[in-house]
Length: 397
Image (cartoon, rainbow, N blue to C red; front, top):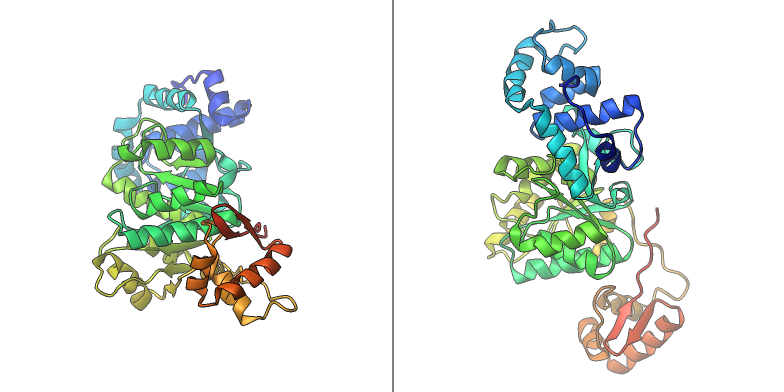
């Protein structure tokens, strides 16, 4: 394919973000071609690329010779596996499809991110041969390497309780510097993305199809906003339709990118449990939000807590503890239990009235006003006509 694929140099420059030299151009084209040829998570393709490099692996993949086991490609890649893989790849080995993918990316203002780039998320390398050969990004690719990153996932058919909790967690975390990672779906995913954007925080959505295809269609405006203010990311190239398999495959990237994964609501057989399983396999901290024992949409979370050693999380502070960012020790005078209760009642995302804070904290209104005055002097809280909120503080990098 390499000798038949002639990519327009301006197109290649547009999707790579830099003017590639000879070797980089060949590598870019080869990895773009691999994203067309192989389905996400194809471990045969991954092992071949790891052993030979993307360019030579592409030549071998589309050739006729079959290397002996234990030769250059390594003992784990048997001749039979390669032969079967070639049968999968060859129907897609059309240079025009690779050119179309690059042109679609250029038209969608998408970038092609490769291993070794400054914005390549090395966290996904933990997937081994199942790691992506490249990533297509609309938006800010720097968010893929900004820290900390937390994956918040859950049911599409979420309840009001679940969406509320997801929004509270995502909003508080994003307001203090965390990147919210999710899948752009209805329900919990959408609530998490919206909350992050609502506090002018950072969010990344992994899509099962190309980054130029808004799916689900009802999230077209949300996904466009994420592309404008955050990042849309996909493993398949532009123009690719989402499929059930690709949804499951993209879950491993969500789990790999997050320093921790939190499942807010999930049914007994929810796809979110697939993401949780990847997180557990990768050794990423896993949290689950409990719900009513009578709620089918929380049955999966309770299963994670009981069977998969997930940590019970009920606040953004507990989510931070998953990746080791424990709450700082209180300063002198900050041990006042009334102060702690009031701080717990405050939100970094929603403004609350004095009466609401008194109800949430269980403190008298006069006591709330007195403490708010002190916290205001310390610039821990601020106020406007809508009420009081806790001032977000940047997370340590």
